[in-house]
Every structure is written in structure tokens, then in C-alpha cells.
Image (cartoon, rainbow, N blue to C red; front, side, top):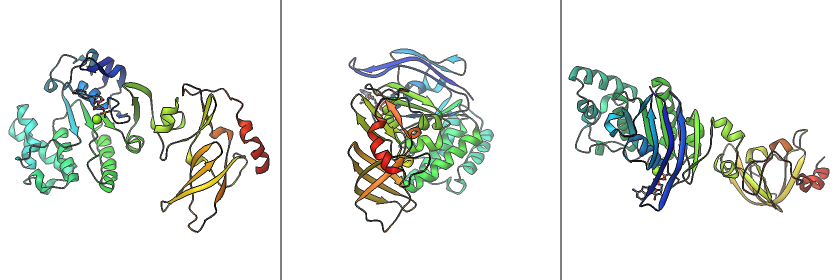
Length: 346
Ligand code: ADP
Ligand code: MG
């Protein structure tokens, strides 16, 4: 088990593509830390630098108490799991899992013991003789996990390991990987562009954009207290609504908007219903208001066909951002925008 510390990591490609602008990060020992961000923001590059597969231009990588910046990948005692599984196609499951142990010169008996216990853990007991081509995507990803686990690494690095799986399997594997982390107690550093994965699996989220850390914290902190518009709009499903008022923006989450006023929710906005999406347990309503388009996540009324709607919210539901998109605690004088409608609501 180990913490991972990054100090001032910078990386450019071909001297002109500046990918990482000085990343300082402390991945706590035993945490399930998620590196989250849009495609192209530098997640894989950062993970590859930690693994030793890529050299940084500046900065240090520390694993446990050891500076590994100049060490080769195999000297870092990390296990990496990739999106494309990276299994050896001509080797059966047993050999795929065993390969890394042989490379580490672990004796046969010990190898067998570890393989036996890991295939139970990932439920592949009866698949040992199969070739990767004979298995489903989900099973292959389990082999990749098993191969990582038997090495008993200081930490696991995973780069979008679920993105090749269909939606149902992805949901199932999310739960399995989270359970695996609990069982092993080892540091997981997990890359994804999918905020639902991040929110549901991680104990800690690091949100990256354009090669910089935008915010980090527990899923709850990131969700309830976004420090920038970028974070507010990246996290949440669907993401927060943003209304523009000159120099300020106001964000409000779709699930905070309701169709009935209450003592806590006495401000109101009205709009034209431009679309409804019935999701079964809930419905997404898309409203065109005079301040912009808003999404409402609400109960579903299958038969409701009204063309306009009024939604209600409270001041506590609003998050304010300045011209640069940074969170501000100032209360700009925009609540009055809702005030005359407010008086209609009560
Ligand atoms: P992410 O994993 O967040 O999608 P990457 O780390 O893969 O992002 O890539 C970040 C940026 O670096 C992208 O613009 C990508 O094109 C660029 N990049 C990554 N690897 C290389 C490389 N070997 N040579 C040149 N550019 C690269
Ligand atoms: Mg990537």
C-alpha cells in the first residue's frame, strides 16, 4: 500500500503541445482517487508519467516515500489496467495472469496459490483455459484486473477500464471494482471522463481541465460546492443549469427545481416546455425561460402535456459565479430578476 505524490509535473509534446502545466497532487494511501476530466485534458499522460511509461519535463513522482521519477516502470511496483485490456492473445487466462509473476521470479507454488485466490475473487474459476478471443469484454476486463491484482502492487492505475463495455455491464463492473477496492484496501488511481463513474466509485475526485487541476475533494464536496462554472457544469447528471446575468452567472441543479412552491422554495421561473424525456423513474423537462434554457429533473407525469410550466427554487439552491467563472459569495442584485415572479408565487 502506498500514497502517490506528484510535485510540479509538467509535460509538453514536440515543444509546442503543452499538456500538463505543473500538477501538484497527493493521492492518499488506500484512497480510491479518480482523475476526472474531458477528453484530451491530459489524464492518460499524467497516469503514464506516474507509471513510468512517459517522462515528465519537470517535477517529481513519489510512491510511498521513494522518489521514483527516474525509475523504470517495472521498478515502480504499480499495476496498470487499460481500456483495451492489453491481454496476450495467444495465452490462455491462466498464462495471462501468471506472466507478471514469472517475470518477478515468484516460485511456481506461490504463483498457483495466488492465481487460485484471484480467479475466485474476480469469478473466473472455470475460465482458466480460455483464450481472450473466446471471452466477452467483461470477462476480459476481469482477466486484466486479475493480472494486476496477483502482482500485489503498491497501487493500481486504471485508465478508463470500463469504456469498452456496454452500459449494463459497465454499471455492474463499477460496483465490482468499488467492492474490490474495499476488499484490497490498496490505493486506486482511476482515470475517467465519465462523471457518473467518478461520483459513484471514488472516495476522492480530482477534476482536471486543460492540464490543470480545477478542484479536488470528496464526491460530495465537488457536487455540493463547485468552485467554478466549469466544475458545476461538468458534475451532475444532467449538469447544473446556468443562467447568465451580465457579469454574473447563476447555476442551479436540475434536481433542485420543483413544480410546487414550499417555504424553502418560493422563487419562481416560468417557461415554455420544449421537450420531455421520460426515463421511467423520473422525467427530464426542458424549459425555455427568458433567462435561458433550463433542465428540470422531476417526478414523472406520463399524461402531462402542458405547454408551459412554472418551477420553484430557493435562494439556497443558487450558486453564483463571476465573469471569470469563479464562484463568488457575493449576492449580486439579480435575485430581483425573480422577484416579481416571486410575488406571484406566494
Ligand atoms: P486524456 O487522456 O485526458 O484524453 P491525453 O493525456 O491522452 O488526454 O492527451 C492530452 C493531450 O496530449 C492531447 O491533446 C493529445 O493529443 C496530446 N498527446 C498525448 N500523447 C501524445 C504524444 N505521444 N504525442 C503528441 N501529443 C500527444
Ligand atoms: Mg485518455
